[in-house]
Structure formats: C-alpha cells, structure tokens
Image (cartoon, rainbow, N blue to C red):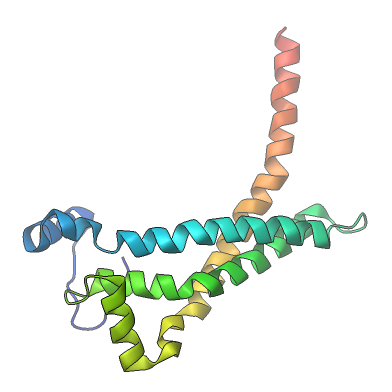
Length: 161
C-alpha cells in the first residue's frame, strides 16, 4: 500500500483493508481510482514497449553485449514512459487516498490549485528509479532466457522422439 501521510488509516493486512473499505465506502470504494490506474498502466506499457524496441534497435551493435543493450534500452524506455505517465499516476494516488476526491477532474483541480502544475510530477524520481530498474531487469532476463529455454525445450523434445 502507498504512504498516505501521518493521519491516514492504518490497515493490519489486506483482508482488514478490504473489510474496512467495504464497510466505509461500499463496493465502489474497492474500485476507487481504477480509471486513472488503467490510464496510467496501459499507456505506460505501450509506450515502454515502443521505446524499448526503438532503443534496442538503435543501441544494438555487433561489438556490444546484447544483455547490456537490453538493460540500457529497458532503463531509458521505462524512464521516458514514466515521465510521460506520471501525472496520471499522481491523479490515481490522489483519488485512492482521498475521501474527498472522487474523479480525476476533482483530483486535478485540487492538485494544481495547491501545488501548481509541478504537483502532477510529485514522486517522479522514485517512481522512475523503481520502474526503470524493474522493467529493465525483467526484459533483460526475458530476452536472455527465452531463447535459451526455447532451445533446451526443442532439444529435449527431439531426444524424446
């Protein structure tokens, strides 16, 4: 769960959180912020993959280890996609953590009124660090392991036949 500040509700575990939200807000409370979550994650994934493929093609050279190309491409792609989608993530978090903000428009108005346009980029550095490392590692492992595992599986199948 994300940090909500000093006066925020504290949940003992996921079950307690679900039960508390259900009692206080009903079924709709369990889906609070779903729209901004989709607006953050779907574009992030699409942009990440597009940037990753373009960067991988740009950085690939015969003398460079492919794992390094994959990792650098993944890091830069994730950082770029994170910066672009950060405002949606801030809106999502604001909606999910506030009892007063029920729509992205209310959250946008409140954030920009209190913090200005820069408020939409609150937390971009830690989010960028997390996503860059996370996605770069996942894609590097994927790009390195899948071909090797595929070769092993084909070899194992041919020995069985």
